[in-house]
Amino acid sequence: MTGRTLPDRPSIPRYLAPVPRALEDLGLRYAWLVVAINLAGTVFGFWYYQEQLATTSMVMWPLVPDSPLATLAIALAIAAWKLGHELPWLTAIAFFGNIILGLWTPYTLLAFYDAYSFLDPLMYQFLFWSHLAMVVQAFVLYRITDFPVWAVGIALAYYTLNLIVDYFVPIVGDPHHTMIPLERDEPMYLGADALGVIAAGEVTFTLLALFLALATRAKLCEARSQRA
Image 1 (tube, rainbow, N blue to C red):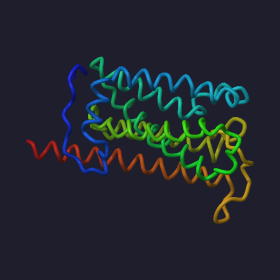
Image 2 (image 1 turned 90 degrees about the horizontal axis):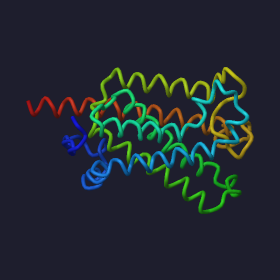
Image 3 (image 1 turned 180 degrees about the vertical axis):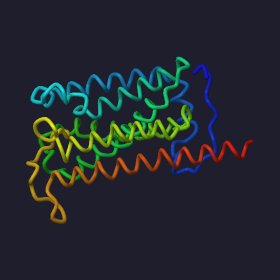
């Protein structure tokens, strides 16, 4: 595949391909613009994380700025496809990252809505909707990859490690999750503290990304066998 023509749109269930075809085609046709937007988002994300990075050991930096790393991954994955070198492991990491962080950030903004009152309303809306847009673009990646199981395994391994150091075994220093506007032990819902609330969200979204990737793989194989 050279990346110069639009890939076919396989027939898979709507819950695995919820983005309208016209919007999918638009994103793929203007892939370099999508790459540029994601790179701009990556730069903004690293700026947003600068305070946390400054207080984190450098060895843990690859596991701290989650959202900008996810947008960087999808920018590189789409760029590689456009250049004719689709990298399944990178595309799988991009899929996981954009599903997980694209949902986790709005979830956290809503869960701690009152505590985020210090944010400018425009910044709050920007963070909320820009992260949901990450989910939308993740659902277009099935057009450029078939999610081989080994690639899904690499993405799962990376995000499992990310989960561990974010919430359970930080290894170096404190837990490395994105900073939240509450103390970690602040009581929240159903007996959970603030750390438990955000950890539950990320675990849930990681499992969701795994299900979606493997289900997409299965349905793509099924569609391929039906055409044979």
